Image (cartoon, rainbow, N blue to C red):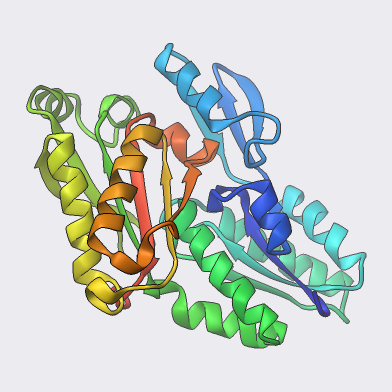
Length: 294
């Protein structure tokens, strides 16, 4: 639309169809399973469900950020269309890909002096990052220029609230994010850690909840506390998960709690990049709320 392209990274965890409908371009990430390379292309060539199954069967999953060279090739394909770019990157609290995008943008703007590339750190991840992109697409469609949209994203990115929980600590232990001792105790006690994304875009453990039933209730309580308009909230809600049945339980509880949201919550798979680190049993909830200062 217009004279610029709105762009994201694949770990915004929407779908190719959603991205096409909203006219958002995206750059693929890189995932390896037992040394075999795959593209995180939002499930077009390799689905998150396949990844989770392979991980559960013992496969070792690793990720690598988009290189500067990959960004140069990606951005060039857009600049060749005579378009400017507003690129919103996966949070610097999770990945170094933003720095690669900035280096590529600087290099290319020297080659294309008549073009502009705005690079923005989303401070977000998974479908919370996707929700930010969807809101940005709304503002673009209202007629904001590339410069105005980049400024709007920077000013409003912390208004997208992220809450995650996991019922399976196996891959947190394996990846070193939870110590083996703490993880083993947590599994024995049925601990489901509740985490959020802080104002620096980092995933931070906040509470230790015992049992799935209680953590489902608690994540909805967090939404009541932090969303705009409390129980009258009628804004966008995105949810991503690597356990569809558990995700549906959260959606059902939200719909029982927020009358105006019945049938309006959008569910997505946690994409391959994020799922490589969180593994199965993860549910992530995203909505609009008070700007994060924690």
